Image (cartoon, rainbow, N blue to C red):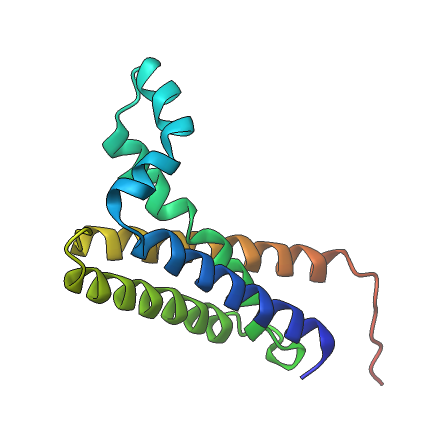
Length: 148
């Protein structure tokens, strides 16, 4: 494993650690910490449920999906984008399932299947963005191979 992959694996670990910290704190504390975002949103007519449940659950898992895709990407895969994509999505879905199962045990948190689904969709979106970056970088390289 080269240095670049270690960098991305550290990114995956940091993302997962941050997600665990954010989602396993008491709900009242998490809500208070997000007041600087939710208060102006409510003033502009945006629902807190939409902001937190829809956007929040998806957006916070996007960096995990991207970092996991880059960590799993290998040059020898060439056009096989499915391997790193499936692996990254499994990492995000598994972490989200772990969070939701743990939240079942915490009286200050609420676990829902919808949260797991939105988190997994967020991971999928991050994975898709990473694959688009990989594809773009591969298409802009001016390397030509001639075969006899």
